[in-house]
Image (cartoon, rainbow, N blue to C red; front, side, top):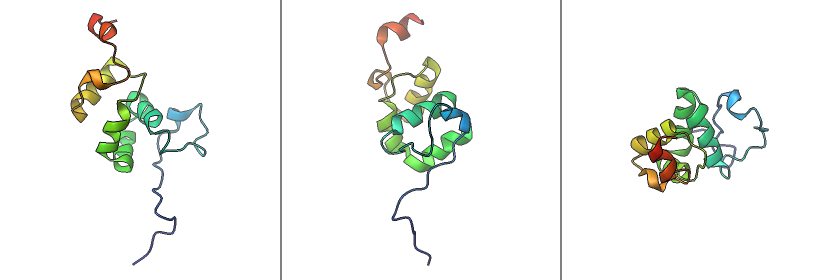
Length: 103
C-alpha cells in the first residue's frame, strides 16, 4: 500500500481561477482563510467548486466557517441557511433590518 508522502496534508482543491483574481493562490492558506474561500465559492463559484470545497472541508467545517462570512448576498444566505440547516440570525452578515426590508 502506498503511503502519503506529504505528511498528512490535504491537497488543495483546484478551484476556478476567477474566484481569486485578486489573491496569490499559491500563498493562500486554506485552513486559516477558510471562511474567505467559502464566501468566494458560494457567492461566485461554479457547482464544481462547491463540490470540491465540500470534499476538502467537509460539511461540519463548512457549517462552522460560513457563519463567519460578512458579505453574503441574500440568495447565498438563504441557500446556506437551508442547505446546512443554520438559522439566518447565526450568520455574521445577517442584519435583521436590511434583510427584512428587502434592501
